[in-house]
Each structure stands twice: as C-alpha cells, then as structure tokens.
Length: 258
Image (cartoon, rainbow, N blue to C red; front, side, top):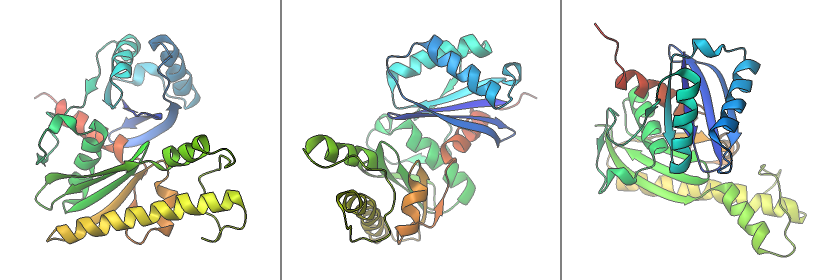
C-alpha cells in the first residue's frame, strides 16, 4: 500500500491507497512546532485506528507547500517505512505542458490536482481548490497548464474579520438559510459563504470568456462541498483529488520493472 501525504499551510491530508483505491484517510492540523517524532506517533496511531498495518505500507509520496515540514516528514517517513518518500516537484511526469513563466512557483498541490484531473477527464478544466487560499487552475483540452488565480481562503477571510474587528464574533463556515442575515452570526455567514460563491462564479466566468473552448469545473478542498450547492459554475466536487493525484504520480515516478 501507498501512503500519500499533502502538506498544506493549515492541514495535512493523509491517505492510504491500495491499487489507486483509497483505503483510509485523515487530516492533521499543520503545526510547525511538532517534531518528526511527534508527527510519527500521530501517524502510527491513525494507521492503527484505521486497521492498517505499518509493514503493509511499501512506499510514500509527499506534496508540500510548507518547506520546513517537508524535511520533517522526509525524516519521519524514512524512519517509519525504511526508505525516503517520493516528493512532487514541477519536474515530475505530470502529463501536462506547463505554460507558466516560472513553473517552480506553482504550488505542488496545484500541480497534483491538475495532473489527476486531466488524466481522468482528458478535457479543458478549471480546478477550484478551497484551502488556506482559494486557487483556480486552468488546463486546456490539449493538456496545457496555463495558470489561474489565487484568492484568500474562506477561513482566512473569516478569521481576519474576527481578529480585525472589536465586536464581530468567530462563526462556523456554514451556509445560512437566507442571504439576508437576521443576526450578526448569520450576517457574517452570508457575507462569507455567498460572497465566496460569487467570487468563484465571477472568476470562473471570466476564465471561460478568455478561453475559446469548453472547460469542465471541478472543486476540491475542505469547503468545496459547502460552496458547491450555492455556486452557479461548479459542476463536480472531488474531495480526494489531491490524494488520487499523488497515487497517479507515484506510479509514474516509480514504474514497475520488467
């Protein structure tokens, strides 16, 4: 089995895959203060919880946008499984042409999502990823990664609103019953949730106007399922797209011998 790890600024998504099928998955909070040993204890405990035997993990692959934690996870995974993990970079066999001024600037998670989506759909795509940032990636039907847009994430915006104001409370990121809030909490929820649905739709429609070909719109990330029902443009939610993409890239980076 393969252990796939997506290290983000807010969360670390982990998945165990057998022949590209997801067997177990979990999320950890990103914490720069934790040592490799502490993360190793957590991963061992979660493998036990999901009834996955450590000796059955034959390899690991990482995508990371947090360089200090990349090194920590290299150390702990070498200790756990006895070999260094594969690490995604812009030079990996993505199956895409990177039409970007400096491909090394592209977040590795964005590349993984793009590789997975294009491999499965073989068409022009817009991928909206709801993470610490809300990112938009555009791929042509010829497999060209063009770039996209980056906006603050929903949680980042909500936290900023709470921190920068004296009286506005912190609220759950849930869609209220009406766009017209009847108290402070639902008014904030309306502004954040419906506001971000509008942001997504506006950027997607502008990208579509710039492109002379149809583009299928996928969403992934922690809040994709919440925003999708109130978006006019999201066509499908793929919550495990990054983990699936890591399995795909692992197979390309480590082809079977013989």
